[in-house]
Length: 72
Image (tube, rainbow, N blue to C red):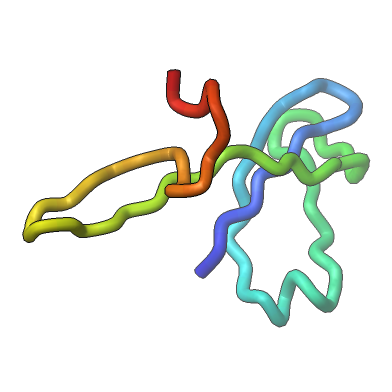
């Protein structure tokens, strides 16, 4: 199940919401757990990929076609 991250416009609290794609498409009604505000904005952050090569695993936040400066 996907995890969506939101930030409250009022108090800047960040929260994660687990929801199915169907729930997301219908429109999630996210409420700030700290102040109760309904003014929430979705945050699009980074993600991590896991790939295997030569029997080992490689954890990376960058893809094989990432440009210069990615991952240091």
